[in-house]
Image 1 (cartoon, rainbow, N blue to C red):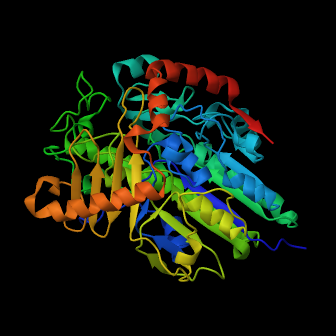
Image 2 (image 1 turned 45 degrees about the vertical axis):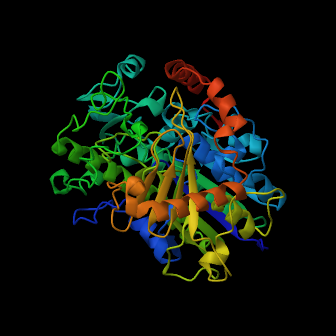
Image 3 (image 1 turned 30 degrees about the horizontal axis):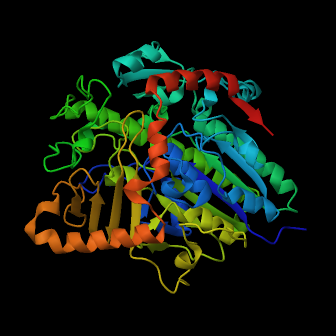
Amino acid sequence: MTSERPNILWLVNDHQAYYRHGWDGGPRPLTPHFDRLAAQGVQFQRSYAATPLCGPARRTLLTGLYPHNHQHYYNYSEQPHDREVYLSHLAQAGYRNFYFGKWHAGPGLPADLGCEGFSSRDYGNPYISATYHDYLRRYGLPPAEHWVERAFLSDSMRRLFPDLREQSRYRCNQAWCGEHAVGLTLTPKETHESFFLANLACEALEQLARDRRRPFHLRVDFWGPHQPYFPTQEYANLYRPENIPEYGSFRDDLVNRPDLLAEERNAPLGDANGRLIIPSALPWSEWQLILARAYAHISMIDAAGGQILDRLQQLGLSDNTLVIWTADHGDAVVSHGGHFDKGSYLTEEIIRVPLAMRFPGRIAPGQVCDRPVCSIDLPVTTVGAAETAFERRVDGRNLLPLATGQAESWPDDVMVETFGHGYGLHYQGRALLAGPYKYVYWGNQPDELYDLEADPYELNNLATDPNGQAILAEMAQRLAAWQRQTQDPGFDDPGFQAAVAGDEDKLLHLAVLRDSILRDSRPYV
């Protein structure tokens, strides 16, 4: 006997942009397994994260709500899970839920929501978990070890991570999210977190293939390709740094732009006041190496995800499984003057993300969708595929009618929001994307308006151009409509004000986080 409802497999990469590198004739990150999935179903060319920060973005992936509605504004939020999450609806529909990998979606663990699998509290660090070391013993593998080529840390972060030094060996044995570094993984790829998670997922699939009486939902959240960019040599060999052309916004002087776009606390990219050094403190030749390692890390995560897809096929589970592969948000590396990581801004690099879906018998292969979609849509799509629904109002829509050509209508615009990066950086911004145009409203900082077809790197702000005022007014009206539709309180949001009032010192929080990871990183069943 087999289940009638479809199985559901989610793969979520952390911190991966819908890269536009390669438009200028240079190489692009190689993602053959993601590309294969897209060719077998649908690729969404204009997919946006609801917000470009891990914690809030991940809460959105559970709830189908914008942060202004789920009220998880920053990475360190203790906002309880008092909104509906799609996992609960799947469980009520008879699904067996598995969750492997990065959580970082608020307090507790996926186990608290009824999931089997492996994860850690908060950001988590797989390399110090008992499950990882048991995996190493079972397969006769050494602990992961890395060679650090470059590190980008403020003085305070260097004090927090004293063992992280350039041109030295390093093991990720501290609060991993602080490691703004690039280099190589010296040990076999199987020691990397991505292949560790892929192995756990494949073992779960083998178990599920033996008992098909209930449908399953299995989600794998890789910690990569978020920095530290530590690919193995196998993937580093795919890219020659000298062949990577200068990125289109690398020399952006940020003139006529919001002041917050110049924030950069990582040394040596930022000055003593946390301001981005322009022109970049690093020559392009050094950025070429950084991008080459970032590309290689993307390819390594792609290979780990491909291992899961291959096992799904080998076990005869593919034909009845909806597969979704996306990222929680993007990555600003090298963009707009030479940033590392991401910030409080709303540039395309950190809000536009990859998204592909495959659903045999429902989604025809070879589809390409140019309609704007958002991460708020993915939980709604998932419960829709499971033939259930959220009980309360959500912000997202079911993508399946759009992907199958059955949608009677679909919006031609989409909204993205930010509340700043936290840790003392608090802003409210909203972006509205419609057709070729992108409008960003900051309230107390200059507006932004770009024609993304003519200006894909967002170098020419049209908000003050006399010829752009009619478009600016129309986009502002569209944004206001989205805010009304999603019950956005805007700059008077009491939840945001409470989050700002409770803001913790970044270093104190990371020290506490490091201790909690050491204490709480554990498997769950």
